[in-house]
Amino acid sequence: MVHALTGEYDCKIDAKGRLRLPAQLLKQLAVFQASDYIVNRGYDNHLMLYPKAVWGEKTKEINQLNLNIKSHRQTVRYFYRGASEVKVDGSERILLAKSLLDWAGIEREVVLFAYQQQVEIWDKQAYLKMLEEEPDSFGELSEQIWGQTPPSEEQ
Image (cartoon, rainbow, N blue to C red; front, top):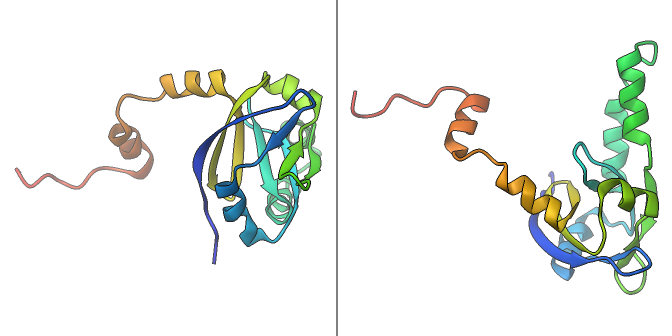
């Protein structure tokens, strides 16, 4: 059974780069039975948090790329660049590397966006800007991705 994470959480990073994980998210993450996670760069200017077991599955995919092909090598490098293991401490916090925080433009306020088996970590202002750039119609976007809508009853 695949456990899917869900939710958006407003959080703060302290001066030392520590992020306290919300209790509701920790409860969801408990199904992975881990206190070890991997943080790396996301596809956009955000960070990704993966339970260690999920990271293992992700790396199986990326490790199938052919390193003799330049675009594949670049993709592998990008994926692994900055990846670091983090542990949840006794105060339910993780310590994020300064280099990753700088890369993502994260200062103090963040949004954690949990879906599937991963959590995106966004600077709050960047997250709000990304939301402003969403298409006006989710229905139209869904149609483009999943195919034509069924014929209407009016026909």
